Length: 163
Image (cartoon, rainbow, N blue to C red; front, side):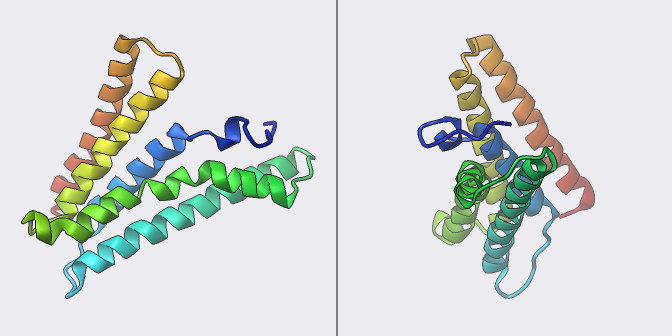
C-alpha cells in the first residue's frame, strides 16, 4: 500500500470506513442492553468509545502492516492514515446524536432509533461509495440492498437475543 500525500486518496472520504463504522455502531447498539439511570449517556459513550478504539486499531494495523512490509512510516504518514480512517469514528456521530435528541423526538426507545440511523447511514455511505467508484444504478442498488441486508441481520440478532 503506497501512502499518498495531501490531495491523494488518503484525504478523500473513506466510504468503506464509514460503512464499516456504521455497521460497528449498529452492532454496538444492538448488543447493548443499557437500563441504567443514564441509559442515553451510556449508549452515547459506548458508541464514541467503541468508534475511537476501532479507529486506533485500524490506524495501528495499517502502520504495523507497513512496518512488517519493511517500510518506514513517518509521523506524517501515520497522521494521514489516522485522517483516512477517521470516518470510522464519524459514523458513530449520527447514531449518538439520535440518542441524544430522542427525548425531543418523543421516543422512549433511543436504542432502536439509533440503530435505524446507523443502518440508514450505512446504506447511504455504501451507495455513495459505489457512485464515486463509477457504479451503474443497478450496481448502486445492489450495494444498497446488500448493506440493508447486513443491517437487518443485526436487527434480527437484536430481536433474537431479546434486547
